[in-house]
Amino acid sequence: MARFLISRLSALGDVVCSLPAAGALKAGHPGCTVVWVCDPRFSAIPRLCAHVDEVIEARPGLAPRTWPQPEGEFDAALDLQGLAKSALAVWRCRARLKLGYHWQREGAWLASQPVTPDPTSWHIVDQYVDVARAAGGVAHEADFGLRPAPSDQATIDAVLQEAGVGAPFVVLNPGAAWASKRWPPSHAARLIDILADSGVRTVLIGGRAEADRESVRSVLAESRAGATDLCGRTSLGELVALIAACSAHVGGDTGSTHIAAALGVPAIGLYSITRPRRSCPYGQIERCFHEPEGLDRIDPAAVASRVLEAIP
Image 1: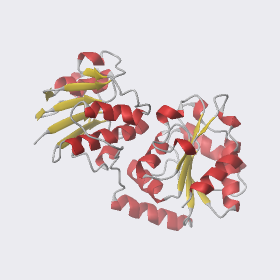
Image 2: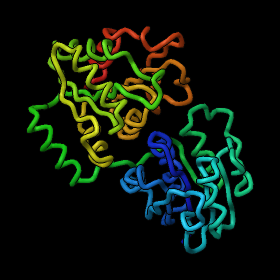
Image 3: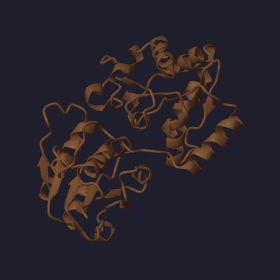
C-alpha cells in the first residue's frame, strides 16, 4: 500500500489550503496512507481532514531533538511550505521521491525537488495540488475533506443556544496578523448593525492575541446592535464547528476565511494588499472585495448586501 508524507507546519490558512493535496493523493492512489507533519498549534486541521490518516506534531527548533523523524518508508514526501523547518521532515524521512512547493527558501531546495505550477494554477490551493499531481495525485476539483468533529459541534451548539444565537447568523473576523489586513472597526460595526436590521445576528471571532481582542472590543464599542463575542474562546476544532454552522463568513486574508471556503460556507473576503486571485476563499472570488488603496475604501453597506445575497 502506498504511503505519502506531507510537511506543512503552519500557518492556519496555509495548512487549510494544503488539504486538497492530501485529497489528490487519495484520489490518485486509492487506499494509500497520508501522514501529515504539522505544528501543534494547527494540527487540529489535518486531524479533521478525511484524507489524512496520521498527524505528526512537530515544532522544529535549533536542537536536533526537536526535529521530526517520520518512521517507515514513503513512496513520496511533499514539502508544501518551502522553509527549513518543513524541509527537515522531508530530509529525514525515507522516501523514493521528494517534491516541494516551487517557492523554496532557507535551503529547502536541498531536501526536495521543486514542482513548477501549471500555468493555469493561479490560486495557492491549485499550486499545492500540482505538487501532489507530480506524485501521481489526481484532482479535477479541490477536495478539502474538512469536517467538524461531532463533539466540537455539540459544544458550539450549546454555546450558541446559551447566547441566544439561532439561524441565520454570520461569523465576522475583524482581526488579522497584520494591521494592514484589518477592516476598520467602524466599518465592521456598521456591518453588524445593517445585518441586525435584516434579522441576521453576528458572532465575532479571533485569536487569543491582544491585538485580536482589541479589534473586537473596538468593534463592539461602535456597534449599536452588538454581537456575540467568541474571540479567543474556542479551540481550533470548535472554531471549525462554529464556521460550519454559520450562514456566511466575513473576514480578510486570514485563516478563518480559508476554513469557511474549505467547508463550503459562503465567504466574503476583504482584500487590499493581498491579491485575491491567489489567496481568496477558494472558488469564491466573486464574493470578494478588493481595494488596493486600502480596506477603509470597502463600503460596509456593499458588504452587507453581498452577505445577504449569499445567505441560503
